[in-house]
Length: 420
Image (spheres, rainbow, N blue to C red):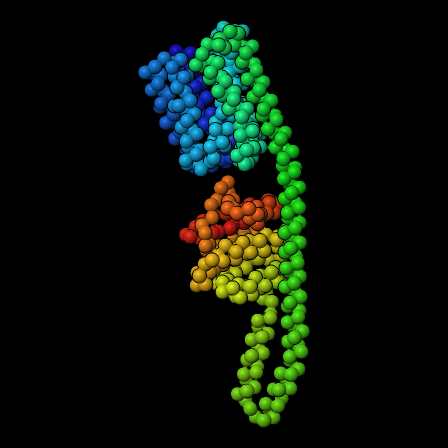
């Protein structure tokens, strides 16, 4: 009785172990949606497995295991989560490889104690420990590797895939691996451990290189933005000097109109000059002068391109590194403008919101788009080479300031939300 309970408990935990790790290795974070999908796949595959146990013997079930368990998990990653085939296959086969520590410790326990119950108990304990360690320490670096270009995924995924095929050929579909299982299974156990360490070490080196590239990119974008800000300030100063120069002529003309009692001409001159002053004035949105320049300059560009611009700014002094924050705002606004270049003039619209709330600064930018963007792994996917750096830079700079950002599509609008 206890043996049967441990048997079904072990295979239930083993099934959930494989499903959860497959999702985690493919880059999916633990959310309510992924948890529900994992439970749904577990229920479906568990029912198939249980039905197979009632209709067939255990050896036949293991031969059908790739079809009743691994294939459905792959299909969920491909169809439901839109993962590429190399990523889905590598994630599932690596999850299978991660079962080896529990398998080897179970065989070792059974060979020493000759107690099947204790062997199942050890397998369950090792599965839980392995699963926790993989999710906490290895899912992030491995998912980064498995979500690279297909060539990189095929290179790294070849190790678990080759072992997957080899193990089924040698241990399930044939009896070639039937002698001294403890000694033989040690190799897959060590392979699993070595591969995990290798992926983690590779990821760390890759992150260092990627971080250096991102820093270089941020410096370039920041420099470009600062150049734009300086140009806007220069333009504003030039307009101010011109207004001062024109003021002398306008005052002289006004004096002449007054002498000639030409009230109508005087009023037109005053109205025209007031419009010039209003157009060249930097609006005061917040206490920060540089941010006022950025928003005012962007509003002027929107006016020239026929884009309706609405800014709601309810914030005090900035309490963060200003240059990085200004780059985030400028990038977000520039992306919003570029996204609607092909839209008709009456459909162009940008809404900016900056607001202090509960000791946090909330930034939101909403805009329509000419082509609906595809969002994958939390970022819009660029369909052209050289594009997509702006959104990646926004996320990197946001995380650098200790904040979080979210890109989404709502009511046919592209929405960027940032909390700092």
